[in-house]
Length: 338
Image 1 (cartoon, rainbow, N blue to C red):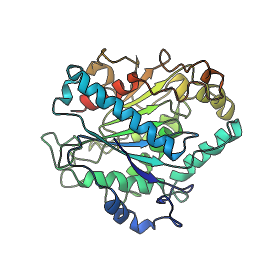
Image 2 (cartoon, rainbow, N blue to C red):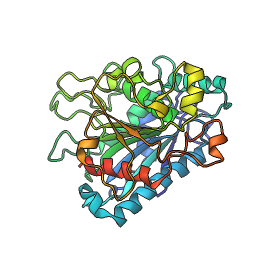
Image 3 (cartoon, rainbow, N blue to C red):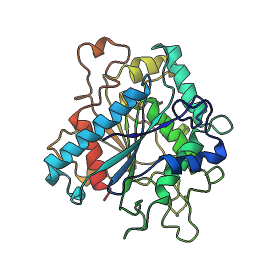
């Protein structure tokens, strides 16, 4: 599977590869409509945002590797994913952003501040671009039997996947894009004709998130807000992996932000109930009761350990999430979204 790429510059503006200038704000929807072509045969649409120290080519390989592994699992053990009886054909948009910095506390803070600024109102445009990207996908859907499920004309489901600062960036952007005062008109967060059909996503999976443990209370509370009309942008579960072997969100995060991060210790305080479980290997299915929660912490310390070399590197096991176990988790979320 070859993902489609969307490039953002340091201000969160949409800037096609090789372009001398960003796409004007009022031309974003036109550009996406011209460049994105969602395959009608695709069953699941993914928006993937990479993390710290990840160049575009590596981000493409990462997303492709993860989804190819998921597709192979679906074909090899269909009985473990009964929700995918109709097939599993993923399609992915990879959002690339400037994530490089020195592997130091100062470099960590620099990328942290950049990720925030790219989405902050009045500063960056990432939320606006992401809003239009999700709105483009939403515009291709038709109402299924259950109006609370986001699909398009091909019965496609939408999932968000992030790694490291990519998860932080994704949450920032989704929250700002969900604000009725900022949302582009292409979005239908609160359709007055049928309030049961807000614009939401079916599942969100973040590997080793680089953010403080209380971020969902202090930084992203609107991700779970609702007023009875299901206006929160995340309808499905938000699943986050963590590992005590992750030095980037442990050692480095501790020195940059005064405490270990989610990728090292899991979510702390949160505005909604959360649940904790362990990462399971292929062949060990996830019962719905383990993932059917607003926030799910997944302890991956037994698998995300890194090899002998990576344990000596500054980030430790921070990027050691490319295992069949990860594809199994991602695929289980897709199956249980049905």
